[in-house]
Length: 413
Ligand SMILES: Cc1ncc(COP(=O)(O)O)c(C=O)c1O
Image (cartoon, rainbow, N blue to C red; front, side, top):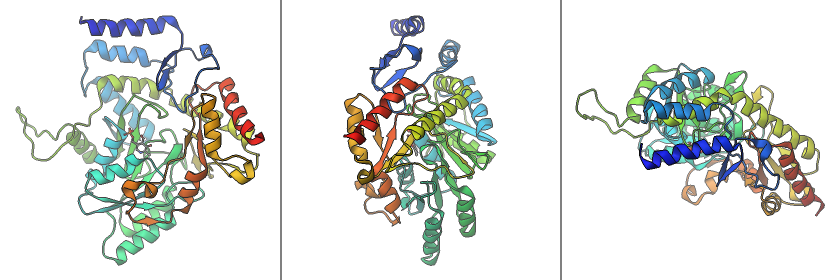
């Protein structure tokens, strides 16, 4: 066995024997949460290994399927599809890759436009540009903080009148909660425009009892390090359409035509998930409900402690929506509360507590400053006053109380 592998195995062995907390910047490995001294830095949404992750990773390692294919990749696809309520799933190297391929599958290409949420992470809009299409940004509504279906309808009507309908609507399920897909579907069906669901942040959420990811023709998830379950980096494309799933696997493996040599008729990508990471993902998925329940409990404690204070407003969860509360997101009216979201963030930082402003809308990003925009005020207000509080699955009540006390101290100050 080579020295590097011996060292890796020895490090893993030490970690499991010590039963202690190892801090690995910027995330930590959760082994025994009770051992965490409450003076340690509190992260926004660190990875949390709850069960069989280490065993499954070593199983993949020992099997020598150290490749972007293997039994864990196949099993992870089946298990994730079952959880997402779709017939097929394709394991990929990132959520961004999943969105890029999804747009590719429905034929988005150079010169097209795609309607998408301005209140999102840049990966949503970037994936649109990878296809050669241009993102058109749509504001959020006040009920869900996701795509406003009325603005989508206005943009589609304008596109039709101008003789150029968008090729797709890329709906985003932001911060653990889905968009309003019944309303969006009605609007999009009227204009014959397909919807793709960027559910990178919302695995485990439901909408009218239907799982996030299954609410449009194709769904996309991320297993990035800060997501509700993680493979360190990874993504999944889910769909009921078998041809699309087959084509996604083909494109994700450099579009290799059937031949003994390497033969290629179209441009492909190197987008498949590693079997090692799929093993971690399977173990994480086993405990998805625990992750969701813990994060919802964390949200409720924040809501109880801060919800009745003047100027504090939590991201709403309308009836029929079930959010994972991946992150607890609130807005702070500085005049009513007595401190701004940014002042609270700096006070938390001084206490070694990581918090983060809400997503800066895409239409305010220099790179998309000239793109078409519908509305904009709702997301601007969420960005101006929004704050995401630590929400990791393993956040203890003692840690959370430190966060709450610091927020309350800002108010008194
Ligand atoms: C809304 C949204 N879409 C897409 C992505 C991209 O996922 P990944 O980082 O796995 O590429 C992320 C997160 O990272 C996200 O938050």
